[in-house]
Length: 264
Image (cartoon, rainbow, N blue to C red; front, side, top):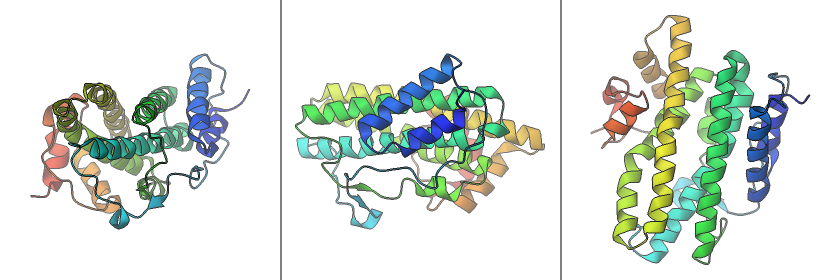
């Protein structure tokens, strides 16, 4: 029987979007039906495979997207979100394959379910792009999304602190306003896709908080101060308000974690 680590590596090494989505869904199904061994004898790659497009640019070279009022602005925003979700597939399978041996089996249950969600999110956004006459890869994309994973590749607590509890939590802050802008522009279909992603991301952030808390409890340390230390050490940039306190609290990420690090 193949190990779950082997299967996670297969997802990371799938370069083309359709191949990555199919592999992610296949691995998640195989895990659910017990067809993968709970074994971690395969190293994850240093970086995932990437398609030829989109062109990846450093943040300072990314064109400004606008606020989504025009069709062109909405298209650029949907493309940027598709890139985030495409990268999130790799982040979910990497955390399961890289760190799963340090946790109970349910850790893999959680993160492979996240990976399947991210594959679905990407597929929905890619389909919406095609309905606009575009496609994923038609525009340049941010090159820095894997940096947080590389920075935390050898520390499970740091990975959980930064990726779900900072980066994904930021999505909880900004998505409701983005949905409102799409709805105001008459694009309720895109708004519904983003709202679906938003509700799923609350659960994803919750998995980060849950397993971060598990590590802290096992080590006998307080979660909030430990989280703040790890974010200061491994995350570049400030935590910017406004925060969606209610969605964050629903995920188990309360203000005592992030308020002390918030920039004004």
